[in-house]
Length: 509
Image (cartoon, rainbow, N blue to C red; front, side, top):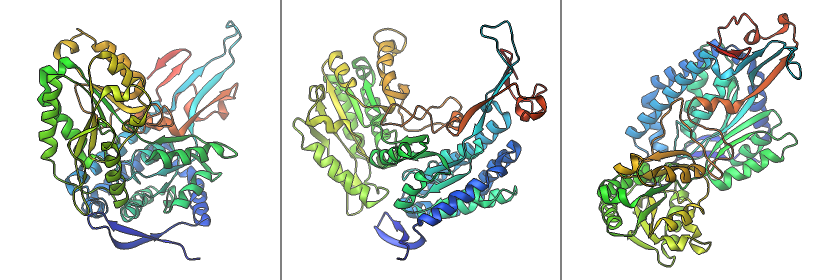
């Protein structure tokens, strides 16, 4: 049987553009993984690794115009958005290059023998080593930043792990182009091109996570798809870490005092955040707790005006469009749910933004309204009108895990008066990033960033954005009483690589 073709599709029309590849067979997946595994040694030198990452950024920038054009043709995200996303991706690659050069990510700890301790301490030297081949599953909504050259790939390569990427079917042509660019960067440093493998097809993705030489996986996508791969990773004869980002509601709480102080600004800000990128951001605010009184009414009026002015937009593919239209229609039919601005089909290939409102009492206990507590991918949010703090707490306790949770406080509440600190404490168990008087869309690539959260937001406690994303692809190993001549350079007393480390209980830099 001939392998199934992989087509590039224009989401603006739903028509096929060109065939760019074929779905990988079991044998082709095996070959890609084994070739990546054989390339591990080429990444052993940290200086070479860092140079490779910088070259990757340089090569992506040199091909920017062609890459952005290809990305827009397959995603309809627009040149401005895509140019910014590519710049972010290049910045991220260079940031990891700096992390690799510094070496703190190795977590070097050296303890000399101490016979006076109870029990006695032998000579112990600990650092972190790369896991091996990493499987990366591309996301649909970020064709650069969470795809072939994205954070999972960059952090895995930085850790010293070769990568095999399962391309997303929404941008297969771009995936092929980017893979060639990264392989060209690898060749500049005598690194085998197989350090970055690329496969297409659903079955290829399943085979990839099952392959015995794959040591870990990173995924960004749906709860259904991610959970299936997570279960497959756990069911292997040798289970592997699976770092999956599956879905997030990203709740927002607007206090009554904040609404009274600046309802119009909050409403306009919410509209901008929930319609950004046609509502296709993983941190889109999907549920907003707002007061039921006059201040909350002002917020809803402001949100109505701003969302009504939003243009219809194209989602990443027609399957997502169909799911969005059906999802908002099902939610809008629930009792006591109103639709001040009706979301749904904006045209044959587009969708229109909108929002729903519902009394908080409908979400306080389990029932048919629990559908409103599930993410609906696209430009829609649910405004939950609460009467008092008791209703707020009742809803918060029923929320699943999230990437973000946001609170909008008044100036006095932000200064420590009122329930500000208490609200932060209530939101902290719900999410990996807690925001105050801001909007969650926009995830800065910074050392202190955390992009993860309790299940189902992610399947682990790690982050996929920021410098500590590298930790997912490493494991610690300790050497005990090893002769000095046999030790890796990173663990020698004289510290030939000048690494930051903890030496006999003290920090050295």
